[in-house]
Image (cartoon, rainbow, N blue to C red; front, side):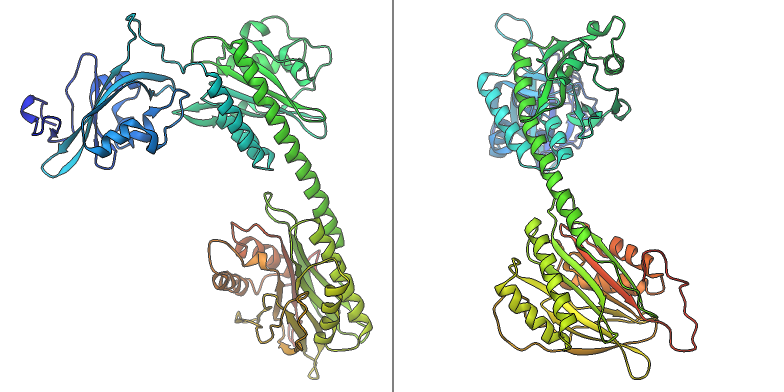
Length: 584
């Protein structure tokens, strides 16, 4: 960039002409940077590097608004509320006083600033920002650490803590949100120690920040020694539910009175903490752990008022973590119940079967997906896969009812699958607790030519997929009637589909193909592609890899999968080797 001089001033006077962004004038006390019309920094002077605590390489190309303007708590300002953004968008010269820039060490720089529009070369436009550190009337520069929270700021932080922590039922996510709320706003370090449900003590998180981004110190995380009942050290007392306390390196200078004290000595030594506050995390029924906030870079020790705020935050964290634990416990009970309700596959000479049940993601509830296979009195094999509407324990209980009633009707009625499903539909409407459900029910039969066939009916369920031994595949979509529980009385139909030698039949629930990110057709095409590629794999490998590859990554539903493979034709050798454990 050419030397900056009055000759570069354009008319009107507030419009600055910057001819090339490769240097800015050195000013004794003022920092200066230039942004293009997208708000990205294209030039800085040496004083700006000093004031901001960042080398030019860290500043160039960065969005100035995202990087620099901060509120008094050190948080990024919304663009709509940023005075500098208003000045930039207006194209007029404007200034401000007693506002804040974020520095490279995450402290705050109080600044007075002036923004004026400028030209970058002959065509491009942007803005030049001139700023210097604010100095109060007594002439003493303002400290760069974030100011103490006002009562209003404190209430706003506590409200935000409550909202963010109680809006998730995942304990790991709740802890991550907690850390992001307090680092670097209140402290340089946050440490979360939790007592597990088996009464083990675990240092789950030791986190600090770099350039405002939270980073973990995993070398300090992991299991801790048990809580010593006679230890007088602050963390031990907090984990026993005693009052909060302040601590520093001097707290642990003497001989340690417990294994936890040894871990605390290491924590203070490695992190460089010079002051910390430690508060118990209490749930409604018991102490769940402790929250420690520490300072290593910013000056000043924790005060009593800050310790009181820490207690309030830890109390809210305790409620959120207790709710998350209760939810996970309930979900585990439902999932366990559902797994125990799923059947063992029968042994059918010549026919191989394998099944999988994959629970929903951790953030979702257990669902009503199920599969079934059992021998019938006439020697054929009944197969079914279905999905009861809902995602809770009621759906799992409804699933058990529907499955058991289908078994009873299929055994008692020597009728086609459609007639059995019609009886089941009436029961769902009038007897079962399930509201609505989808199901495919069929009979695997030996055909006249000593082959195999599937006689089946579909009540609103995704169609079966058939893959032949040579890798050709198609969906059996000839039959598709209304789902169970609607009250409709339309006649259902049956379809007879031959199952060629060494062919693979895939029955599945919609969690294997549905995704909010793509269409159902795309999910079905993905399933078909992966299933065809796996046609020669042993059945247990086929199931595992199909779940891994075809199931959408953003899936939030459970999956039931039932796979059948017919034997080779008489006299032909069968590929794939003997069945693996877990296959029938």
